[in-house]
Length: 268
Image (tube, rainbow, N blue to C red; front, side, top):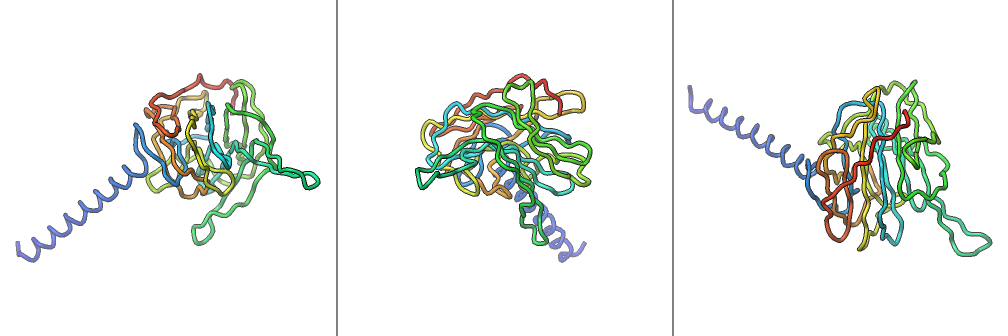
């Protein structure tokens, strides 16, 4: 075998090894499996890494929230046809002032549907009128059925309010998260198109279930601090998960216990 050929094979092996190390480091940085990670300038939460499914139920419970400009709790999902959908509990979702008086803000539920344009940039194609509600702990649900995507919430885990729907085209399942940054999961972010300024005393519990066709199952999850395509972020937060169902977002110190409530009894 000629020296030139040996050098060529060696270069190719080094190139393959370098690519593998790059991908591994990218995955490790952007999608840590378990443990604790600090989110800085990104959303903070857990990514869904379970099987393909037609429905996700995300539980959140705000033990305490310290944000001077508001926040959002988002259940996000990529659909198999490329649509990106969000079911969100936010504060504020409505701001109003009467007769020049002080501004009043309201918390509540809202959903968004996005599609990518030719350049790959997400474009908003649907958003509902906000549903005003005081719900510090609740379930957010996204479900695919009959070529529609449905958005719902439950305050007790037993009954569900389906508050909006949108044509899902040929989408047949929800895509689990992958290292490319397409986030299906549950995160804490800022208010609309903003960054939440989280302060001391913030503590939010998150949990995910997926529907296996007959019942709700605790989801396999991983830590995630991905940004794209989510533009609502946090200035800083600690995120912890043990990889099964639950996660916790906190500041200024990491919290290493999670809550995985019993499965909901409603059907998607």
